[in-house]
Image (cartoon, rainbow, N blue to C red; front, side, top):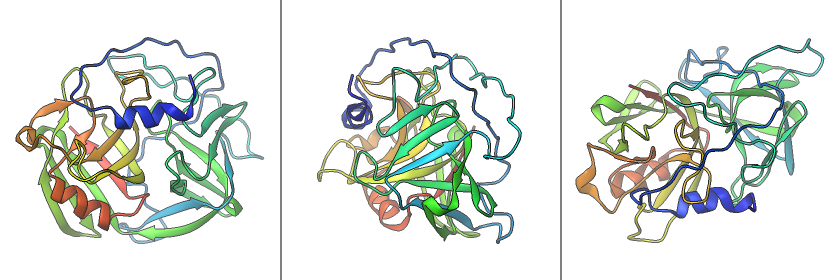
Length: 277
């Protein structure tokens, strides 16, 4: 299976199509450090609304589980409630442009969809940055070299409450967009936690996904594959607006096409997302 086709296939597949779940077993590899964010990946030294975004400027970014020079951290695999989901990436199943290494991951720049590779900064430590990652288990962090990226900021942040099917988008403290959405079914739920937009992918007009797919750093915690690809969660439009306000997806978040276009135009890659029950 060619790694670069996995995410592409998963995004192109219609989220309403029935799918199977192939079971894979994670192969042995070093356990990554994980942090449960207590803020929306904001930078403490700045205002509470500011998120620092690291955009790669080199062809490959090496992520380390432990900051080089620090003592190694002993961690164990983080269990996923209700499902022992295999790691992504892992030996034998790399994500598109992402592969495991002895002490972390390598990420290719640009992405499979030819967009700049971005990370949200969790902690700025001078020459090294602790960043949120696209990997499973979800909400992993790792260390990257500051020299490998350029830094920018955003005040935008997204808050999704699954029980209300309610997505709010803020510019700093100000609510700028609110909409009802489609979320995951009880058997394929939208994952909870703190994530970020990894990239935006334009779609053909009048398609099943609306004008834009906004990919996130979250993977499904129930599915190990989706239509032959990886189960990466995205926000996008829908050709079935009657389903808005229901649990009808395989984990992705669908919204009216007009809101999809508005958000994709407004929000940069790196925008933080909080998903709560």
